[in-house]
Amino acid sequence: MKTWGLGIQKKAFIFLSVLAFCILLGSSSLKLEVIASNANIKLKPEIGGENIANVNAGTILLGEEKQGEWYKVSFEIQGKSISGFIHEMLVKVIDDETSQSDTDIPLSNEISQEEIIANIETAVESSKKLIRKEQQLDTAIASLRPLIPKVFRVSDFDKQKRLAAEIYLWIGLGYAAQKNEFLALKEMKNMFEVDHPYALEISRNIYDPNIAKIITLAEKEYLGLIKEYYLKISTRPQDAIIKLNGEEAGKTPTTIKTDSPKFTIEIEKEGYDTIKEDVFLIAETSEKEFILQKIGRTVHISSSPPGAKIFLNGEYTGMDTDSELPLMEFGIHKLRISKNNYKDWLQDLKVTKGEGPLVLEITLEPKTYISVDQWGGENSNFFTSPTGIVMGRQGNFFVVDESDLKINKISPEGIFKNDLAVNKRDLNRLKNPFGIAVNSEGYLYVTDIKKHCVMKFDSKGNFVLKWGKLGSGDNEFNTPLGIAVDRENNIYVADSGNHKIKKFTHLGVFQYSWGQEGASEGEFVYPAGIFINEKDEIFVTDQNNLQKFTNSGEFISGWGDKGTAPGEFDRPMGIYGDGDNCIYI
Image (cartoon, rainbow, N blue to C red; front, side, top):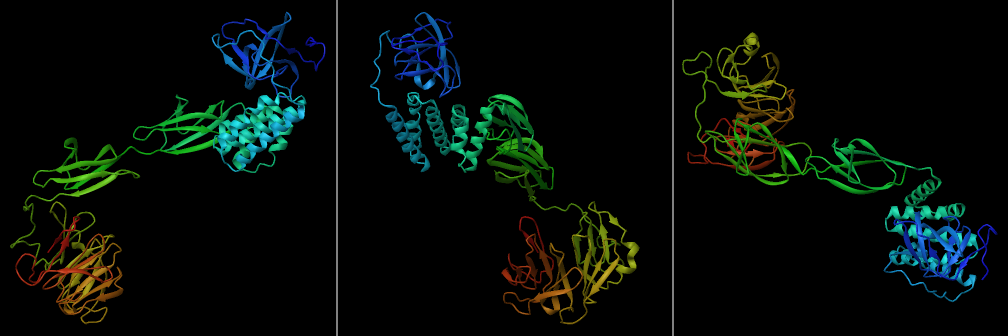
């Protein structure tokens, strides 16, 4: 075969029928063994570019560097040094122990150009069918990859480039179907590098928005329009440490910059699970927010009374109620609250996920009930036959009796306050007050058993309104006794002489009533005490028993009977309930 020099004719080939001898370029060079028959060495690193030589399978070349998918190689033939590029799929990297001996490896039997092209196109169509159906994707991709070396055997450079571009496109589509966007991007970029105009033509009818973004990104990378990628990262909560490929890159919110669309980020914040995620960006600038998951939660513990020691899992925490325990791991913990003269409060505390601290409110039960303080007495000038007591929003107590003032106000410390005395004239509208209640706005409601009415006063004792008179109608009473207010500030009155419970708005407008004289469910014999719990359930005492109703008067349950044994009653009057669902009569 005749051999031409590189500068003699642009389209000339140098066919190497014997092994080329590698030029020793240093220890960093790679030994490459040609694995395809009649492999092309190109003047430039591009499919469809000018061939400067063909080499046999088994030829040993020395690689100087790698540019993308191409090795730059140097070799010597007939005393002349030659440099060019060979595609990575046409060679394999070897070491001295695996290198071939210096003997010719015979070429495979030559077939016509038409057969070469037909075989490639048939194989491509077979893989395309699988990728379209998203079936056997690994098989389809593996079948397409070996077609690249075969493309180099096509002598028509334009056809060579078009075949290679189409193969790269479908390999990329296969990876995209596998949700491997980074490898899809790499193959799409190869497609543009092979033949940019033809790549645009064969990819223009792809309508999947995600794949279309990858193709656009690949073209921009090919054109050099994208050199760096930017990702704005925020977290909830903020101020989390961001690591990019293992290196700290700031705290959220922040924007990180990278020269590759694929990278690994880690997000760390004390008290939260670490997030580690492989990221692939399909745009030059992107934003991403991460919701951090707590590994624990703070717990706010309060007790009534306060000042109790907090023990967690058998150990004293060094904190007393009311306190907020620092981050506690999710799960079940043994909690004990201890205070002198009170029973220990024991419970399994389950710390669960949620926003904000876990709030725990505890009411401690005295070991024994003792008198802490008392007001008034037999010779007291403050009270004359007190009948009702209620605690206001500020912790002050209001006591109704038959004294000159009718309503006495006492501070939480037990000090009598005379700020209601300035409105003594208004308070003296009351003739024989019995029950008292206070709403969420501080207004006082008092029943009067002689005037058979309800009177409303503000927190300073100013008279506001009155409703009711003696009778059995909706807006009439016969000896009203107990009175209570629900969460919506509705008023409930025990109309004792009419054997009913009546409900009014805070302005005294009648809503409805229930009950009649009798001993059956929902019936009363002179109801006296009334209490409303935090669920707006109504508890009513009469001469013989206790009954529980919904706030619309529907009977729930009842218990008790006339007598003096435990659980029996003899004309009970007052009633109260605590936060532990205990009822006191």
